[in-house]
Image (tube, rainbow, N blue to C red; front, side):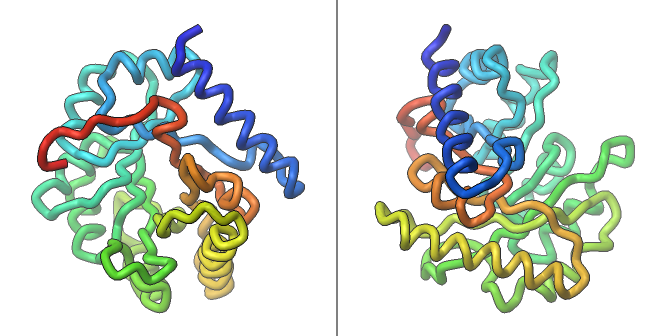
Length: 232
């Protein structure tokens, strides 16, 4: 068994324990393995251990990796910022996008999604804790953006994604994640039909699960520490 396989089993055990601790079914929380900066070989090891959903931040790196792994039945999630000149690559190669934060990007993804592919699954990135340097829509602006996006052809709006500031305090992390859950509930009360909360990473997945996350994005605890290239 590889180190990556061992790590995956440990992360899945953390998710299951968190679910049981708050009375949730473990199969209600999906694991997105964040494979940015790791090569196709690492993804193959994770797939051999049963992982099929992978998150990528850097679009060109991801596209190259997707091509190298086209023989495997993988699901690819774009979780990084998207510039207008990269929307065609995202629309063509990914299954999910978690990081939509403005209507222009959603419109371009809609226009550029190949008609032979299934609808691109979208989450709106929300700046849930008001971080001054964080991407994402302000919570009070999410409803209007969601209504503008929900009928765009080739897309399906699924929910929200958050990246709050890290904290070692479980209670503080839980409080922030609960804001995202409350926002999702409020949107659904307005007639939207959203089912996805993409929140929680290596350091705070337990708090995210307790607050209602349906998908945790874990990289370091699966693949190990990262070495970033210059400019990343």
